[in-house]
Structures are given as structure tokens and as C-alpha cells.
Image (cartoon, rainbow, N blue to C red):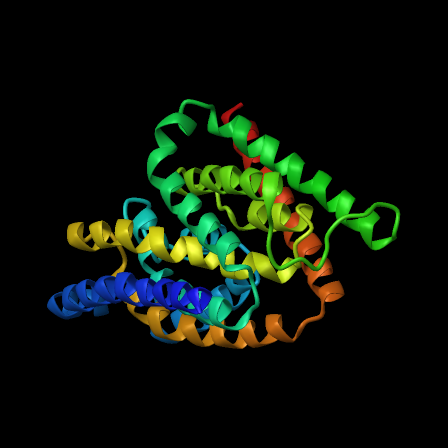
Length: 296
């Protein structure tokens, strides 16, 4: 069937793109293995943090935000190498997330392909336009939007508002609106605003089964992130020890979380989506208004 061939192409593309990153990374790590051992962070603590980080990330919690706060608190990564580390450490765990979700969760192949292509292209084409808007305004709008969306989800849970559904794919105007939004989400990733929460919100609002968000989110990220990460590896602007450990231990956290997500019913996933949107919205607004208060 055509659907199966397309699915194999997507899975093969994930393996090839991320395999290229893995080869470049491990060659670089081997060349600098002595320096890597001297980098900050005890291996056991890094193992524990990586497992928890990617367990939560598999549910849609932003690993970018969690890592930034944690690494600055522990001083394991200096600010110069932080952007590179945030990207390189997640490449292989996210690839496993994508392979697991795409291969095991039923989703309309056209919806999946268009969303992945749109977000990937958006991450390269749209940032030049998005950066013209003040990031603080973007963050505040998204933060309040996520909290407002949570209210709508809760109203739906109380049967006061029809929202959410069991669809596995989109057609017509809903599909193309979603495709356009995903291009914008790709640009958001590039300027440092995680796309997981808004992706989950869009999937939910369009009437799709909430679990559909996971293969789409991870599928889009696993094509765009490795390319930029290879440049960080080439420049050496990343924490090699953390990336090495996360590349293995993070995968274990991913596999456990994927099993949990696949075993959840729709009602539980709806509560999970609501919790993630509240967390993401509050965190984003707290950081933005906290930064404003410090400047004053």
C-alpha cells in the first residue's frame, strides 16, 4: 500500500538523518574524550537527570525549558555552550520518540506528512520574519493563550463545551489551517520558544485524538534538530559529556514514557494535555514577567 511505503520513507529518513548526526558526534567525542571527562557534572547525576528529563519530554513537557533551568542552577553548562547542548543532547532521544510514536500510533498519513514537512520548512524559512516581532510579546500571547485553552479543555471535560475528539486525521480547511500553524511552530522552535504545548493545543482544538500530537511533534523535530546540531558539533560549542550520556540514558526514559502514553485512554490524555498547558503557560509568563521585574 502507498501509505505503508510513505511510512517507511519517513522512518528511513529519520534513521538516515539522525544516523549522520550520531556518526559525526561520536567521532568528535572520541577525539575529545579526555576533555569530555573533565567537563562538569558527575556521570551518575547526569544519568538520573537525563532519564527524568526525557521521560517528561516524551509527554510533551519542554526539555529545552527544563534543561535551561537545571544546567544554570548546577553550572554544568556555561551560557556560551547552552544552545548547542540543548540541541545536541536531545537528537537521539527525540529520534527514538519519533520512531516509537509514528510506528505505533494510528495517524492519517497525509496529515502526518504535511505537518512534518510544514514544521520542518517553517523552521528554516520563517524565523527571518518571526524575529521582527518582540519575543516578549510573543511569549506573553502564547502564555495567556495556553492558560485560556486550558479553561476550554476543562469546560469540555465538564461537558459544557464540545472540544477535542477521536479523529486520526484532518481534511479540508482544518487540515490547511493546521499546516500553516505548524510552519509557525517550526519558526518558534528556532527562536527558542518550544512548540510542544501549542502543537498539543492545535491537535486538540481541531478535534483530533490527543495522542496524535505525539508522532507529529516528534516527527517534525527529529528532522529539523539534527541538522543544526551537526553545526554545533563541528564548532565544538556543546557539552560533550552531557550529550554522550543523554544519548543513551535519555532513550531509556523515552521508552518507558512511550509505553505509558500508549496505554492511556483518551480521558487521561486530555487531563495530561491540560496539565502540560497550565505548566507551560505559567512557566512562560513567570519567566517573562520575572525578567521584566529584574530589569526594573
